[in-house]
Image (tube, rainbow, N blue to C red):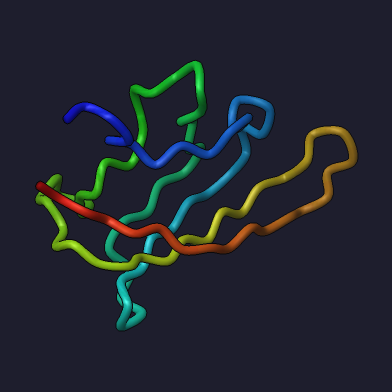
Length: 88
C-alpha cells in the first residue's frame, strides 16, 4: 500500500558515525550497514525488509542493534529493539 515500507530511525543524520544490524529470530545476521541515514527526511538508504543481497525476507519479528557515536561528547551508545515485518 506504499505506507510504512521502510525502517526509519529518526535523526540518524545527526549521528553519521553509526552501524545498524538486523537479526532474525534465530539470531542470524540478515542485514548490516555502516552510516545508516534513514530518517524522516532521507528515505533513500532505508532497510526495506531485505537481506544484504536485496532478497525479500519472510514475514516475522526481526531484532535490530543500532550503534552510534554522539558527536557532541564522542560517547558510544546503543539502541536495541524489534520490528515486525508484514507483507501483503
